[in-house]
Structures are given as structure tokens and as C-alpha cells.
Length: 300
Image (cartoon, rainbow, N blue to C red; front, side):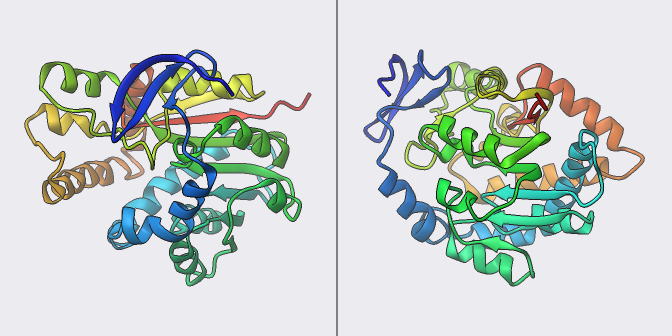
């Protein structure tokens, strides 16, 4: 595809463009598929994110609460709540699948990293150690729900991925996708007014950069009907309050712990409505660290 558009930022010899063809920001040209495959099958958890599994395991209780909330949100849109078949693409350490299994859903995960796959298998989860591909879907059934958390930003030409998801989803099925909310108002403010570099730009790992509008349009262009939007805590608030955690992993963990403490209070049953109203208000303003969309494949 011959993409074109204004160059937004350059980093490490790569350029991010506001693509007039695709309708979202992405690296151009995209890296070769071979380098992406090697990163996520062999290197990601060893080199790019060597502490990832350890940190996620430390956060397991919080992650299960986050995913239990998300599953309840998805359930609001699932028509037949009996024997829900769910596929998690890029299932990582498997915590979404664990929460789905606890809900009584029939879980399947797809995870290319051997380290994350082994971690998931040790939790007795049904996971394939592969990329989600045309070849793999020949072996899979259709699903009532497909979930994909922080994957689409890593995938060159995400339209191809969305076509595969469309084909694997039952008519009326629900697709829940989460990506980083990049170049959001708080980030732009920090770059413009507080002399930060765009720290969230990481061209080899993140090749696409979405916001609420661009991801909604992309899903719509691929046949999905977006029915709700949500977000996560806007971590940039800490930077705006003076906690300069960019480049300081220890302070970053401290800020993350504060965010967890805040959310665990709001995730209690009597406070969950407060949390959801707050985070939906963030989303409607284009704020929050993640873009989380709930979409349906129309029956017709």
C-alpha cells in the first residue's frame, strides 16, 4: 500500500506519519514481517520487556479485577450468555482467559511468545503458541466474543488482522479491542508546554498509533458497529502533577502502585458505577491511557 501523509515525529531512523490512506498514524514504511515475527516469538519477553512477566505477576490480583470488569461489560452485549466461546488474541500471561474461565466462558488464547505461552499453560489454559493467521483459523471455531488487548498497535497493516477477526466472529458477536491512546491531549500538552519528548513513540514495537476517533473509523470501515467506548487511568496525570516517571522505572512503578490503589477502591461493587462513569467521561473527552472499544459484527 502506498501510504502518504504528514510526518508527525521521527525516532531511531523511523518516521510516524498521519496517513491519508489508512486514516491513522503509523510507521512508514512498516518494518518487515520477519523482524516483527522474531521480536514477538523469541525476543519480546527476554529483551524488549525482560521484567514484564514478573511485574504482571505482581499485579495479578489487580489484572484479574480489571478483566472481570471488562468481561461484565462485554456480557452486556452478548445475546446468548450460555456457553460463550471467547478467543483472546495476544493472550500474554493469560489473565483475561482466567477471568473468562471463572465467568464460565469457554476460553481459547493465541500467543506467539513461548515464555508467555508456557506461563499460560501452567495455569491450565487453552492457548495456541502461534500468531493469529489465515492458517490458524482453519483449525478454530467461530466465536461469540473476540478480545484483543494491546495487539493492534504492533501489527503492520491492521486491516488484514481485522478481516481475519471479522471472519472468525459469529454474526452478532462482540469484538472488544484495546490499544494505547496515543497523541492524546495530555500527551500533547506535556510535549508542547513541559518539554517532554514523545516518550510513547517506540517504532519497532508500536507501529500504529490510534486515538478514539481513528480506531472507531477503522473498525467501521471494516464492517464493525462500535457500540461503546471506555478507557483506563490517564497515567499522564502523574507527569502533569510533577511525578516525572518517564525514564525512571522505579518512580514509574510507584505511580502505577498509586493508580492500582485508586482503582482497587473503585472496583469494589458499591463503587464500580463511580469508576465507570468517570472513565467514560475521560473517554468522551479523548483522555485516558487506553482506547477500549466494544463493537458488534452485524447479523446481516
